[in-house]
Image 1: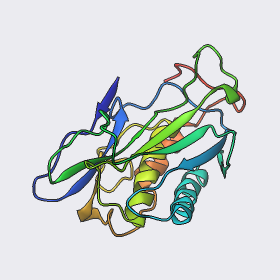
Image 2: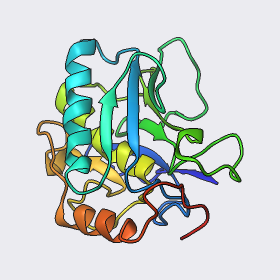
Image 3: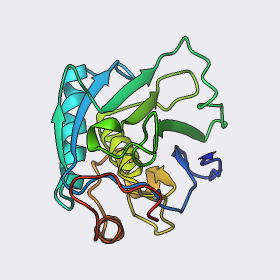
Length: 210
């Protein structure tokens, strides 16, 4: 079941992300040597595509440093599609939350495929969709990096954290520098991703393994 982060703080503008099952990690895990081939389609908020791609690469390198995963940009054959919902689209994933909140993105959580009985690594896909509609945030490149960092955590299978300052916290908040500074992974994020992938088959997707 997909849940949106609908809580908002009326005193501080915050960008909220969208996830599945909130605090729970995905029961489906990528192989420990998974290679993600990512592709960006579209741009947000007037940002240059080249700048967005560099920000994506920086964000993904942060996760790569603490996992066995590799991330490669491709033009074809992507298994991680990063797309943009354009201003002319009325997307139900991105409802209006009021002047002080916005849903910045939606991500798949863990690997998915046409059949969950097929567990070869190349069967499975992942996706991040960015909100560039009228309900979205006013993007800048640092904010974009932080949203990608958060959403790619969901792609890897992590749920949300209640720890203030964690990248996987439910919100990217102006008060924590999330609008003006490229955030690193916090200690909680690093601990959780290491624990989550502590024992995983290097060659096969782990289905319903908790």
